[in-house]
Length: 134
Ligand code: HEC
Image (cartoon, rainbow, N blue to C red; front, side, top):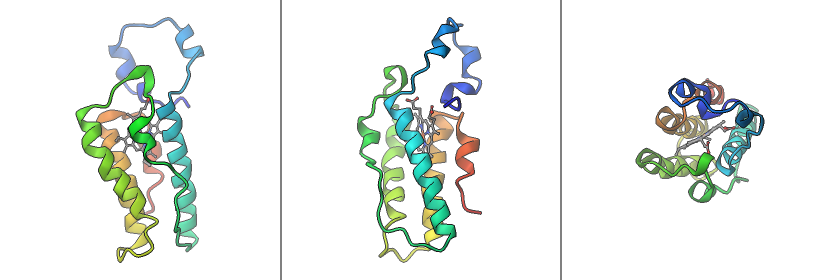
């Protein structure tokens, strides 16, 4: 919850806001969905490492297009250029007909999380890196 984008550096560049704002911190719809994606991929990683072949996805990735972001932030050009590549790669992990190695497909999806985060939201990057299968 406290690993939101603002944790890294950004705060110092912004005007000081009253502390009470932090006590009332309410994750946005998008932040909630990001945490759901995190949990989903954590489970996916465990399954893959156990030798299972996942064949269905419980996430509604179209939420990435509709969910409200923190402070009503809008989607940047960077966001738009990364989001569909990410969605395709996350879907490819459960594509049982793919002839690409499962671990590679999974890591590709996680690397696409990271690609977007490099420009959009750097705070959670160390946590997302832990999802990679070494
Ligand atoms: C297209 C860009 C993009 C992609 C792809 C993306 N993210 Fe995010 N992520 C964001 C943005 C922007 C936010 C901030 C959302 C907000 O504050 O409303 C965010 C927030 C987060 C957060 C912090 C949520 C919180 O509690 O504040 C986590 C954790 C996270 N993402 C994990 C992931 C994981 C894991 C993936 C891949 C499965 C992923 N993200 C893919 C852009 C992206």
